[in-house]
Image (tube, rainbow, N blue to C red; front, side, top):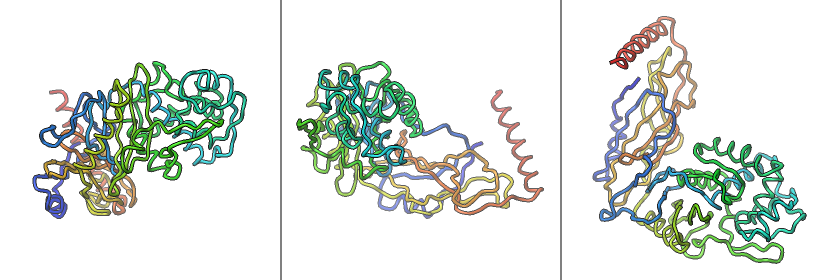
Length: 419
């Protein structure tokens, strides 16, 4: 059932003050929603070039702010494409998660099988860390080889060491972990992104994955910014061109296959703001580097972070079923922030989405739903909202009245659907 509450005047004033044409509102919808509402595929989000917007050549691209997840620009962001070596980010995340849980240790050693050596090592003619056949290499060194040198042999060795074989690693570890992280479209057939019809990712999900790695594993993330690594007496440079050409750049991964084209997941920090760019499908490696740098520079130049709602500020209310109160106050323990255009032309709409009415009893701190902030027709940021206070179970009469009301509303809804 849909419901609407009045916008708190303090929020309306705070959101509008000094923002010129910025429009903000809070609407509470008591409806069930399946997930984040994203811009439609084939979309290009943001102002036109003549209005200060970005104009790029990459077939698929997205630019987000890491802290809030604000989407600053997107183009065909939900189109599935071969991710090439950018898919190694998923293998890295599985390994980093296993390390964090204590399932494996950096000092554990995995054997370089003949399969890993032939398909990903020196004989393969692909990117490799040049690990010797039948040698044992520590997880720490294999991570360095996979991330810095883009070693296909390192990824296969990690997959075989953790899951027994690469196919099981892709199906039972990479896919399972991707779904846990909300990557619902990505599919994996191997550990390294070597050509296979089963390897598909969108630039949006690659950006989500990169943001997760950056925020969840800050210490290990430093590996992505390391400029070189030597193994088997062979020193190799990090393949990320941004590390030497973009101030503040510290990650993440490039990729290329014939079917996927040239792609990159990049990140940089300037003035305490971190942006993440993902592009894919370009025909030239130099175009890839130029496009990624140009998009990051545009983002830093054109946007700034604004706080829409302060931490623990009342955002709205949710209807309660069978409680000693008819509604529950909703807040966020963290400020709700969004990147806005410095020219002040953005129009924002914030909505709280929840399945309701919410059944009592309700504990303070219980997540009730999410607040989504739209920039125009596109979701810019999403953040959970929680009950600010406890709501106990209401009287028998209160529960009966609420039940009768829901019955009437249900009958009315059913009648509308038949029209």
